[in-house]
Image (cartoon, rainbow, N blue to C red):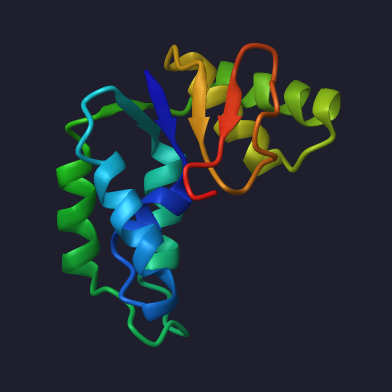
Length: 135
């Protein structure tokens, strides 16, 4: 199983000319069946994709339909245990809480690979390894 970070979802819906290669790669990734994501990832996607300051933002309805389509993947729910583990990971690896919560959601979902460009490519967080799919 591979865990998908928010940036993959955002690139999949991007219409920016400068992101056309990343858009194609993100769409390719989302065709796979071995993916997982988390409630946090879906929340972050919604907030960023519908952000009022974004020039080509999605409507609520568009974002909600996309989120519904991504429920075909395993979705790691938030829990007190995940939160506590994220706090420990944040300290151990000196990363932001939000990044630590993504790492711990990937771990809880049984993923060994975290597809993200937000963390250092190749970084191993105790068995969860970051892979930047856009490099």
